[in-house]
Every structure is written in C-alpha cells, then in structure tokens.
Length: 636
Image 1 (cartoon, rainbow, N blue to C red):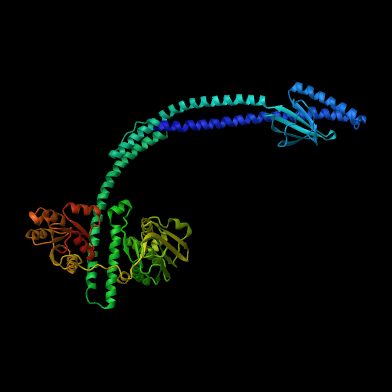
Image 2: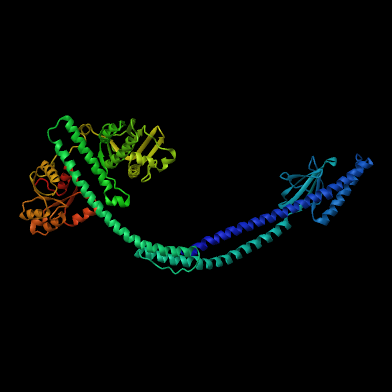
C-alpha cells in the first residue's frame, strides 16, 4: 500500500471518529440543555402556578376558619382541579394529584389516571417547597416530571411533560449532525490527500529514490526538492550525507583492509611463540620431574592453554566484526575445571594479599555439557576483576547446579557466584557496569588499570550460553556477580569419574610409522611439533621452508605433509600449490596446514590452495591426532 493510501486510511477514520465524537458531544449537550430547560419550566409551573394556587385556596380556608369543614374544603379543592384542567389545556402539560400516604389518584388530566413512577427523581429546594424532578417511562412513553407534597391536604402533586416533542427536535439535530460530519470528512479527505501528495508524498518519493541509489552505489546524489521546510532540509541533508557516505565507505574499506592485515600479523606473531610455550611445557611434562617441578610445568601449560583460548576469541576477525561467537559444546568435568582455574588464579590473589576460595554443590562426579572455553573466560574475567578490586580481602567462588543430576542427560541450570569484599560499586553506576569500555568511575581506570571490556565480554558470553550475569554491590563492602547458564548434566560412571575425561590413548587408531614431512621455519615450533608427532609413532623429516618441502615431496615416500603457512623463501600456500601440480600420486599426498591465523576466512583460502585440513597453533597432541584421523591414515 502506498504512503498516500496509508495516510488516507489513517486520516479518514481519525476525522470520522473525531467529528463523530464532537457531534455526539454536541448532541448530548443539546439534549441536556433542552432537558434542563424543560425541568426548569416544569418546576416553575409546579411551584409558581400549581402550589401557589393550592396555597391560596388553603389560606382562604384557614383565614375563614373553615379548614376543618369537609364541604368547604372539597369545594376549594374542586376549584383547584378546574384551574389545573384549564392549565392543562393551555400548556399541554398533564397534572396529577394523589394522596401522599396511599398513592390513590384524586385528580389526573391523563386518561388512565395513573401516577408515574418518581422514585429515581432528583430533589431540589425551591422556596419553601421540596421539589423532585426527573425522567421516567409512563405507559411505554418517555416523560419528564416534577412533583412535590402539600402536607395540609396530604397531596402529592405531579406535573408531567411528554418527551416526544423533545426527542423529535433532537432527532433532527442528530441527522443534521451526521450529514454534516460525512460531508465534512469527504471534503477534508480530498483536500488533505492533495496537500499530502504535493507537500509530503512527492518529496518523500524523491528522497526514497535517492536513498536507494546511495545504498546501491555509495555515491553522492542530487535530490530535486525545492521546498523550504523539514522535507526540503531532509533532502539537502541526504545530499550532504551521501557525499560523506561516499567518503566514509572509501575510508572504511581501507581501514578494514588495514585492520585485517594487522590482526593477521598479530595473530601470527602472538601464536607462534605461544605455540612454543605450550609445546615445550607439554614435552617438559614427559620428562622426569620433581613433584613441585611437575606442578609448575602443568600450571605453565594450563596458563598457556587459557591464553591461547582467550586469543582465539579476541583475534577472530569474524567475531570482532559481527559481535557474535559460536558455541562449541563439549562434555567435561566442570568441577575439576573450576578447581584448576581457581588454583591458577590463586597465584594472582596471593600477590594481592587476597584469599581465593572455591566450593561447589551437586557437581561431584558430574559431567556438564556446555562451552568450556566460554565458561572459563567468564570465570577468569569475574575472578580477575574481584581480585583486582579486593586488596587484603577475600574472593569466594561458588558453583552449583539447580537440579540434582542423574545417570541420564538432563537440562539443567548452572549458577556460578563470585563474591568479594572489595571496594564495591556505587548504586547509580551499577546499570552501566556491563557497558563496553566502562568502569565504575574514571579514577578506577587510573588506579587499577584495564580497558573496561571484561564485564561486557563476560555478559555477552553468558547470554550466548542461554543465561545472563547479575550483580549486587555496596560501596565499601564488596560485590557479588552471579552467572546463570543453560547446561546439560549427567552423573559420570564410576570408572570415568576416577579416570577423568582424558581417555584418549596416544596414537590410537593411527598406523605406526607414518612418514611425515614437517615444513616449519620456527626452530622451537619445529621441535615441539616433531616431538608430538613422534609421540604418535610417526617418522618425521623436517625442512625449514616451502621450497625444500616441494623438493622433498617430489622425491616421494611421504605419507603426509604438515605445512606451515608463513615461511621464508617460499610460503606454505605456494608450496602446496606446486605440490598439487606434481604428476601422479605425488600431487595427491595429504597436506595439513599449520597456522597461527585463527580466521575462518583464511582457513578457506588455505583449503582452496590445496590443503586437506588446518591445525591452528598452538598445536596440541590431540589436534594433530584428530587431523590425521580425519585423513583416514589409520592401520592398513
């Protein structure tokens, strides 16, 4: 439906309803005015004519001392009846007199001689008389009445006016009102439609057409709208905006390319040494160590793993640009994960003279299905925040499942609370504490540091997991952040609970003695990758650039190639392209890419170049084994 039609569809009912309400109000006002006038005439007739007449006759009786003589009283009353009959003939109003106590009709100008019902009347004091008046139905006819009592004679006097004439007059007014409303609505609609077309619709259509062109070509446009009003100003603003859009689009495209390049470099530069840290920690754990050394090495590996997972989220270009993150659901021992995490974060707490404690409920020997990485990042952000703002205090972490778990997988709610005895948050700032780049006040940033992103990221991650984060706080007493997430849970079998989730045997399902060509220029990463592959019973040859990898692949005798993407002399993409051009089975050798780039778009590019799978650094034994398993390089 066009805008003009929509506006008319809106205007006409509004006009119709508005004018109908106005007409109805005018009708009611006229009705009330006429009725009040009739009431006034009735009460005046009753008090000034009828009651004065009766008072006069009663006064004559009293003055003559004959008020108790029945014959004279009836004679004077008969004179009253005669006067009322004449008054009826003169005014058209009816008069009725009945006994006050028995309601017996003494006189009536009505044919049936009945007295109308006056129980719902309004009362008003007029002079020395109390008068009742109102509207009623009498013999299926609407009437207006006024009545009063004359106590000396025990009379109830009623003056009646039929409402037919009044209704007929008001009906004529109503029909005139309806016709006037319909005619006015039609004329106003035609005029408003034309005005709307000229001054609103036509300029809007021109602005709409220009906006469509801007959306398609992102170029500056000219809009032929000459009028000097809001729409004219809007048209000129759109013209200016289109020029700025053209400029901004060019700048944004350039900035986006620069940002992508920067993030790609940063991802590679951070992940490359991190791969060495994590890999060397893994290898160190396989050497003879004292208990304390083993604990340090395990904590080092766990810290590197956590850092790698945080980098995965921060440096993923698609997540940064869309503000979204995919949920990677796995089953894991949440209680064990939180225990390990609290142990690692306890080092920071101790350095801040803060006591970090943890307790759980309904989580012993329970497997939870959720996104372990996101839950871990939420807890890290909240606990790190609590430690930072709690000097020489206590940070308590508690976790529980709302429902007890069973051997069957059930839907459940996970509740994690992080409570501290720190500085607290002012009430007026609580509603903004989850905003991006926001802290409770500017002095917090200067004193404690930080970007103000931690809580915002934590809430977004919690919402991705089907929950949210709530906070209560009091300045000087501390804060309590409560995380709620939708999870699934089940009680682990006793054998699995005792062994944990690390049930993967090294090299399980892989053929022993796989001949692997490892192309990696970083010496430390090469040592790590070679050691991990050897744990999978692979025979590894190492080269340090893509050109050597191509030359070795030409010689044959290789079951699979692990190809680093960024290498000197010849990078992994070019090397993969050349290997795919080799004749026969040499060009079909499986190639697995090794890269520090976590961007999915880049992974697609690598596979389009000929790589069969991608392993993201920091590499782990499980990732290498999983990738080899995908290629079905198992036992022959």
